[in-house]
Image (tube, rainbow, N blue to C red; front, side, top):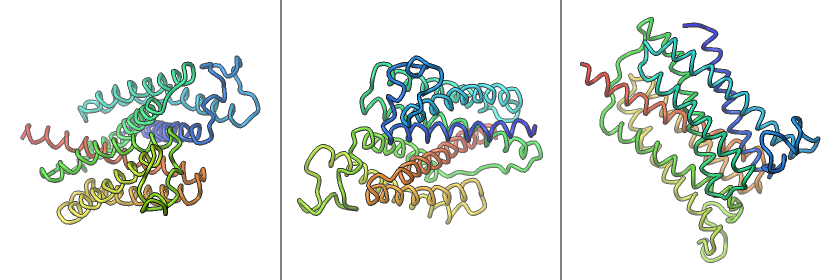
Length: 306
């Protein structure tokens, strides 16, 4: 497989991750209006003013512009090169383009017309899908090379594992929205204790921001437990299928790091490093879960053909 295509895939995935983390940085630093209510210009100029908010917002817009060029190039090139090998390439290429433009559109509308917590949570959720589609497209490029050399083994995915894969993917997306809603309603420090909300009222939430925070924690805890169950199932029955076995091991690692970074956000009182790490780990976790969905689609297609 063309080395340049692989390099483009890696570069595009990295830039999409930068865009995702950059969006979290804009939110965490309150830089959303760093360029005023203008888009694509920044206070009527192409280059930003020399203040932190303007530079952060402008840099995020610049990275988003670069990502559009890279994603369009990757989608077209991979469609030409690997569609004959993997039929899902066309779908992923289209998905990567559609969600990238949706992501950019929501960001632009938020700047020009203002936004609310639900819209900004939606913006982050779409950003995750956009990143995941590019990540999977890149994985396909590398996998296509193995397929040509007949190194890709046929899959065998039982109904219980399919249930875990699909269920956790859908549920994790819901948890992502609860987390984004915490951030955009400024509820991150509503509960200063972990795992309970506070020393008062037996640790239970009593007002809106506390309920938002504890709702996210409860949803995240259930996700953590479910991933442990799925990972144990994979380690028990799928040792010979490396994609599934190591995929769930990776999910277990990322959900653990995600939980730890979330706890540290509370104890460090919104330290920027932990906040950005929290966004990074969920992006990696969601990308792997989306890859599982691709494996299921491939398994079902191969089963019908045999």
